[in-house]
Image (spheres, rainbow, N blue to C red):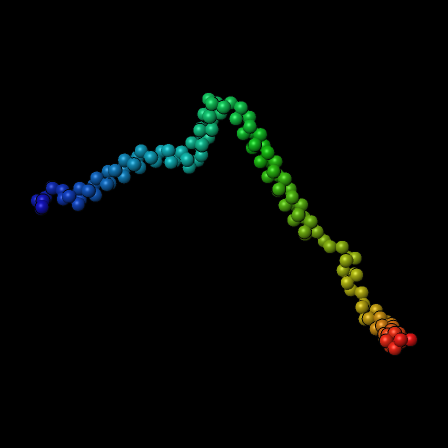
Length: 131
């Protein structure tokens, strides 16, 4: 439609309007979003609530923070003690019991089992015969 220089076409006009609206939104909404970045907004909100509307809330928030700090320290100490306990040197007696020779015991027990088995076979045959 408008082909002469200096005139704006409708497609370009809608793009310019969109750019102006976006720049206004950035200018208007960026400062509150940047205040969220370093938690100043949250701190100011809690400060306003505790000073104006509910003064005892400040005391309770301090108690909750102290409790959370104590729980964190307790978990940290448990983790530290667990790591120290897991990495302690083992006792030598525990390894000495496992390294005893087992062959001697097995030979004695097999000879004893053989003599016991023969006598138990005799008693079993006597019982089955009714003797």
